[in-house]
Length: 583
Ligand SMILES: [Zn+2]
Image (cartoon, rainbow, N blue to C red):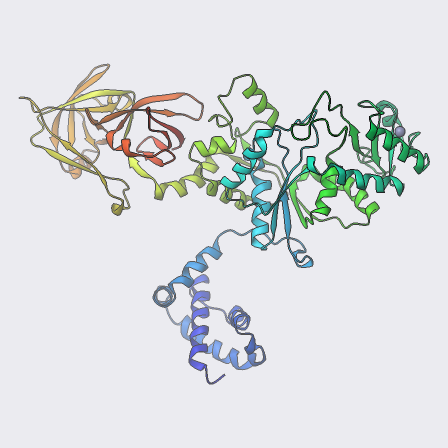
């Protein structure tokens, strides 16, 4: 140990300083020993000597003020400070029993009968994030086995892939259940042969009466051969829709009647309701618990992360797992996450689109990922919000404003500032004494981002300059009041009419405006304007003009229109168009 004494001392010092910074300037020896031994396994046998060194260094470090401690770390190990910061960020709780598995495998399994919306964010992000944290695998599984009631739509397979990509959730493996029908048949046959499932041809009402009384239906106890015969008949088209269903045996005394002998496969007339991918190839289709239950095992899912509304499904599937001699994966059931006013059910979205109520999947009134993207809501904001909520079982209610707050934190430092004047009216400012050069920073805290510059030249004998200002600003400007044109000069209002206003130059310094508590308003020089429309979250359109510097903006750029809000530039070719994100 003596040989690398100096090197070791530095290592201890670094750990002590970092620990001190995290604990109000007072380092604790315990965690430092753990950290050092964790990094240098060979010191395991020398803990006693190490402890001596650590207490010595800790004492020395603790005699420094926290400012001094920080200064030393910043100078010597700036990257360590950054790392500590990242580690301070909210973390998800550990997965149960992750160590029992060679690799953590999670899945997200949507039905492609609609585009994804904010309501799916939790399942997607938690499943993906956990797979990433544990260096595991994240599987996308399309659950498209109901061509009748929850009919999948071809375009949504791709849209869902795109949405996941946008959210930054990399898919390691993908499966489509409609490709796997023969696999479900194979296990069904095995369950039938082993007497763990049966083909029930009872009328639903008849069956219901029996199960409610915890009694077997007239099919349940028939010999296996009879069920295999019925199964063959099902596959060959011998039963019409509703005439036969495969049931998985459970305890008929289970307290929840909905669990008892649950339906696993049924007949769908695919001549009438062809599947968009496999057409009329199959007439017998697995129901949710059959397909999802088998797949979770067959795909090696170790942790299922989903809403607590699935608890009963787990109970149902556990019977099938027992029949097959399988172990049920770890299951985490989180509580409901309600985002007030934020999303409609899938069926309402689909219906609204069909009826023409919404302009498309990215209509700003919808909380689809496509719409959020269009409005400049960043995937990172969604991700941060979901991770902060975590997988807790209690119900959580959030609002749009919660999401906006996360998004604002991301957009604010990176968005350039521009002026947009909604409902513009003309303001004539007279007696401007000279030519002014307005230098408006693109970002108030980041001068390195540059400026927009406008030359303000007085014209004619009354030395007048014409500006566009917002009608709202003109309406609140009383005659005789001084207002400041941001980044330019102060003017005194002389008169306002419905569509114009007049003022005269007052003074240049900002301090003068502050002294009289003048309002700061934004402006656009007449002649330096471009028409611009902003589409609001309620799909109304805010017509106005933007400053000419906006002409060079590219689609997809998110900017802040000062005193208006963050917007995402949508279109620049025909007419500058943007979608409103939030204040
Ligand atoms: Zn029956």
